[in-house]
Amino acid sequence: MTIDPADLLERLIACPSVTPEEAGALDLLEAELAAIGFALTRLRFEGDGSYPVDNLFASRGQGGRRLLFAGHTDVVPPGDSAHWTTDPFTPRIADGKIFGRGAADMKSGIAAFVAACAEIPPEAGTIQLAITNDEEADAINGTDKLIAWMAENGHHFDFAIVGEPSSTEALGDSIKIGRRGSFSGKVTVTGTQGHVAYPHKANNPLPILAAVATALSSEKLDAGTDHFPASNLELTTIDVGNSVGNVIPMSGSLRFNIRYNDTWTPDTLADWVRARLASVDPSGTDIAFDISGTPSRAFLSPLGTDIETLSSVIAQRNGRPPEYSTGGGTSDARFIAQYGPVVECGLVGPSMHKADEHIALADLTGLTEIYAAFMQRFFAGASI
Image (cartoon, rainbow, N blue to C red):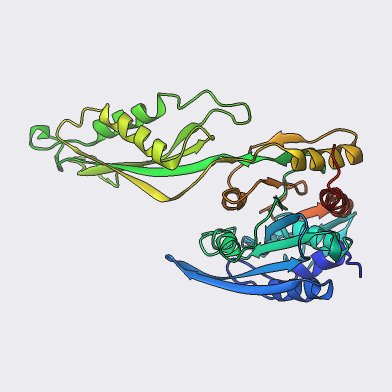
């Protein structure tokens, strides 16, 4: 049985699966995967301060090498539909492109790897799919728990590919072998409110807050590594909430975000922030630091034969190997990296999250071919 990736992508786009509503997308994939011999497990995770999420685990094959494909069916909201040429959840094909919410990020990646799996004989080895509907928002009851469930139930893997859009300008010009981490925090300085005409009866927190901002932003965290740029801290807001000009405010706060490389962990970053705050004279104010949300860890997959094989497949198709990148924000690959080597390999994604999101149909066919060719070599154990 063969699967047309374009047809599958059209049907996936027609499912309005805005996080966390799967809107039939996982039901559709269950039917397609069952038809090509996959055993299916539907998993619903909930709790930990977030909404319930449906997830899908699929497996085919016994023994041999174990390959994992991972991705997400959820999409961001389409926004004002007036900015779209047509309805965002009605797939439209024009000028060799397919338009619709999720076309680039990342229902195309899922359509490509499902179609590629249909071309691989079941006896070749073990193929596993981990598909969540919770990547674009909280990402609490999705891939993190799904991969942990796999490990607890003996579903290990030798190599993983996440179908996120990783190419920059042309299909296969870049694959992501790692990602920077993300660490956000809030610093609050509390003093004593008072009248500006009587400053001796108040304690203005704003000069201290300004000193905190300077302390955090004036020192480089590092100089970068072989595969990562230098880590950077960006101040994102300074808030006082004071709407009048004759009152010294009681408190003020600032927020910041650090995008960091693999020389840091959330714990060592928290220690670095505290050390910078300790360098500021509080002058009788109280300085409080809180970590915002759950930090995303940086990761770098070990370079080895499987990444070389994928690079060779792409080089054979394109005439040159892909760039190894760690750029961009975070992705669910950070959860998978805790259990085994993982790369992101997908389409060109400049239209993702925009109105009239789209991909080139030729790229969808090309990505399917890359996945299929890689699997043939992966399961054959061919050396480079």
